[in-house]
Length: 398
Ligand SMILES: [Mn+2]
Image 1 (spheres, rainbow, N blue to C red):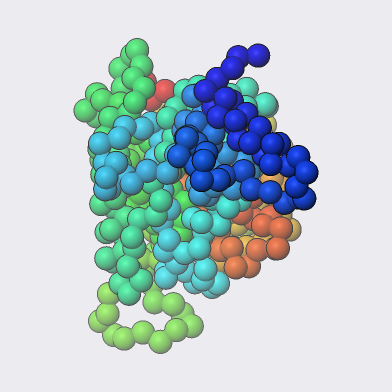
Image 2 (tube, helix red, strand yellow; image 1 turned 180 degrees about the vertical axis):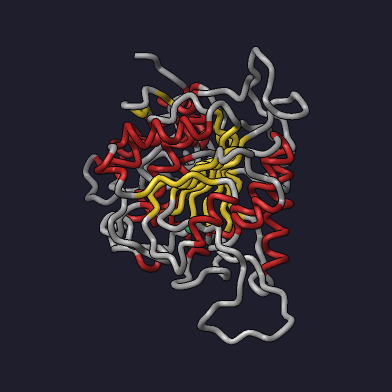
């Protein structure tokens, strides 16, 4: 056994306790006026293994500050702005553009809570990967998004995302970067938030990589043309703002999506108002895989369809938790029955290994509707962990 200074300090404390114990009733203290100045708490409580320094703030699943999968918490826009990383996890606590149940502003911390038993340094067995072998992942906390003005809030997210993306990643790779400037940039995994947040996030990746192929897991298309809510009053002449059902219309209009229908919705099953919605969706650059493909062609068929659609393009993954069946993920804004199981989504995601994932988000987790055992938050967290595994597997090289 190696006798380290930390063990020596701990042994000292225990021996003090043992001496006091002789002839004295429990409970006894271990700290007294004689030893208090000689105790080295850093040695006693420091992480066991130097390689785990990135997890120092949360050593087990139930203690410590809760960050995503125990990634190190850093102040990305403040004191730690100079710190480099490969992946920044960031929360976007925004839910004021949702059409039914609000509450996704609590999503980022809900997903973090759901990730407590995950760890970026634990091995994902079926994927055959340990994220920290390839990537330095940090948790930047949440972007301040103002609650009184959606436009301002979405600009705040756009700015923060651009700042994170503008850095240089810790790891560099042999081969040419797919970024337009030839550099290796950090990737961002955003925890939403309602789905509107994907618009400013896509602006960020498109400015670094050019138009991206989007893999959109959702039960709804989200390419609706902006229009006044049919069942709500509207003032004539007022501008119609972006919502969590129309942001892809704008993404298409702004040229953020890869051309030639190289974008795919997966898990679609929501009702529509008109078949025109499907025609528009195609015009706006999309291919559709429905939820029932899980029975009709299986997860392998879905994976094949996705890979054929996106080809070798840079890929952005956005996942609305309502793609999962509400029996396994009830805590969301607009639940639809007949969704994927968590086992199916894991198989589909693992089937995407090798794609160049430039960024990702997980949205529409509204923890207040969750079961007491956090079923939705755990599902969302595991999906995030799978996506980090995909990022770890494939560097962004040509
Ligand atoms: Mn959505």
